[in-house]
Amino acid sequence: MPDPADATPSGLLAGGGDLAPGTILAAYRAGIFPWPDAGGTLLWWSPDPRAVMPLDGMHVSHRLRRTQRQGRLRVTLDRACAGVMSGCADRDGGTWITAPIRDAYLALHELGWAHSVEVWQGDELAGGLYGVAIGGFFAAESMFHAARDASKIALAALVEHLRVRGFALLDVQLQTPHLASLGTVEIPRREYLARLADAIVMPVRF
Image (cartoon, rainbow, N blue to C red; front, side, top):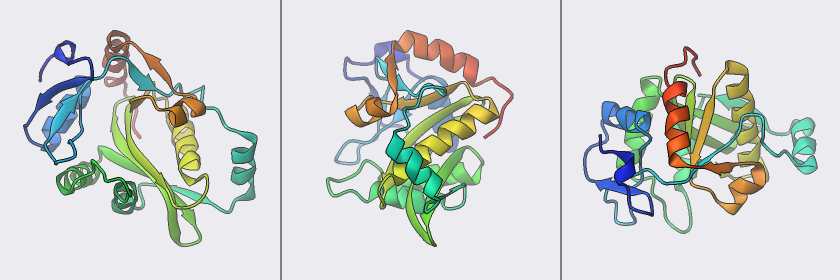
């Protein structure tokens, strides 16, 4: 694996390679993640700073709490990973979730490394997210919603699940105004890598 310190200011570290399960897992363990460009070229990234969600720091609005209490949206884990990935990929402005990316993460799901959180409205998938877990580390890759607040409910359910399971690090990769409003913070890559090294050896499971 390349050294994350060699990344460009944008976080770009390398191009090419493969999406075999072992390659992807080795990348995550090194603080690197795959993210193809608009043309589908496989690129590898390690941004500085890195965005993370404190497991005791998610901002849950009064409206979101009200939606949670109403019970109209139901949460499950690892019931429809393919459906969640399809929902995440279905974006008007295009997507980085190419067919090879989708196949690679579904293979990781079959092997027990990739996981999904689903939010249902009746029998319909209303939102969700997916990512990769290694020890006490979870890398959240993407989320979507087809019903109001469904992606936020998925994230809140993930945060609570990881907290209860004893996880130490929830990586969301890059900060956005939306994620910041939910409580994510940025930390220097050096700090992120130190926390990652401690988290991936923890004897916990998703």
